[in-house]
Image 1 (tube, one colour):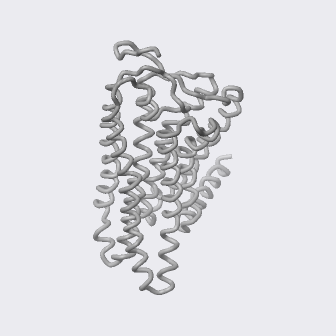
Image 2 (cartoon, helix red, strand yellow; image 1 turned 30 degrees about the horizontal axis):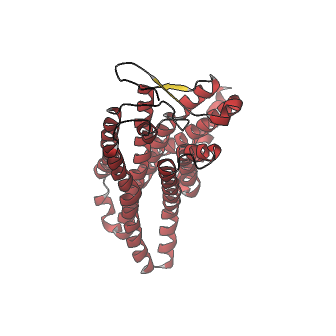
Image 3 (tube, helix red, strand yellow; image 1 turned 180 degrees about the vertical axis):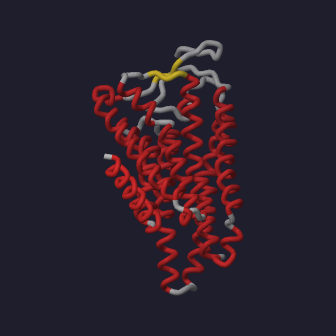
Length: 316
């Protein structure tokens, strides 16, 4: 295999497989999905920002989740559209590392934000009288910053460990870059990378879900001792979050296991679908779940678009 040196710029080759023959069709699909993500997430964010009645911790966390979805999808879909439409199979090493940072911080922040949201639900249901004091605006801001910084620090260390490696191949098995896709190309000892990667994976796939489960166990205990109406309200509040967590955690776990242990055992099409689903699924599903399930957000979104339609008609 050809050796590469950091003293000379070089590119990595992305694997598009059968997509090569239908690039234009896929490029249209990619652009359409990206436009949907922008529309759905911006609708939820705008409804929270423009309505003071929704500027409460739960809705702030939902808008942060949507912002993270926009961030993650923007690090993937525009470049994928360009690659497909203009038939580009190569990506610069710097571009690849940048995409790794963006995608991994997005994936990590998705889990940390969902964990913070579980804590918010725990405080709301188990300590309702102290909720406003515990979940003040300052506390919410600190939790959001902590959720982002925790992921950014871990991912930054992970990438520093990766860029020190010398690569002996240039074929990325995916249609985008992630850290493991670069590490597997190295001819150096990757024990440290594997160990730290396992540590990061355990925090996001094991520790965070455990914290979420503990929160919901406490919530369940309170609901069992409470009235039927209280249980119904708690269930209505927690269901969107549980659906989001289950969908995201299962997809993330499958992605990690598949590419680390059996990267070529599954058909190319299945691997691509699962990889893209991890990046496209949450940014589409999250605003739909919260926008449709939560009455307050749904009403505000309808009002927002109704006002905009009136303005358009008046200007015509």
